[in-house]
Length: 82
Image (cartoon, rainbow, N blue to C red; front, side):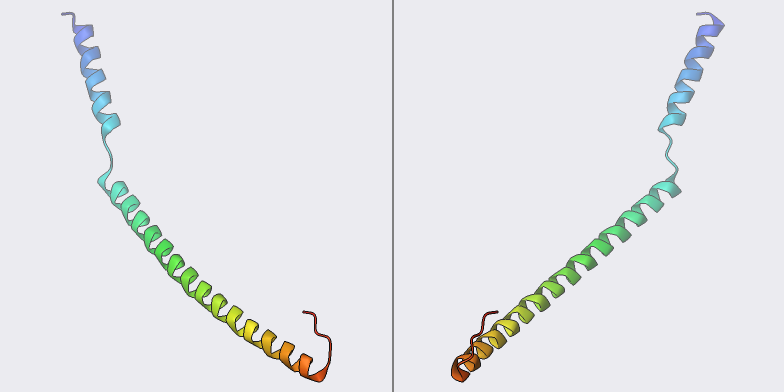
């Protein structure tokens, strides 16, 4: 085999090995960022659940107040149209 072909083969193998190399620190940093993002998303989900509970509770309060206002308006003989 000619020297040039051997050299080309060695360079090709070396380039293949270099292109597959991944910096362990970069991979660790990416993993940490992914975990931080996951934690943030879980926290946002929890807050969304709390806010939905608060909104549902407030809707119940408004419905009760509306019923009370309708009853008082009816007793007073006043038209009430929300």
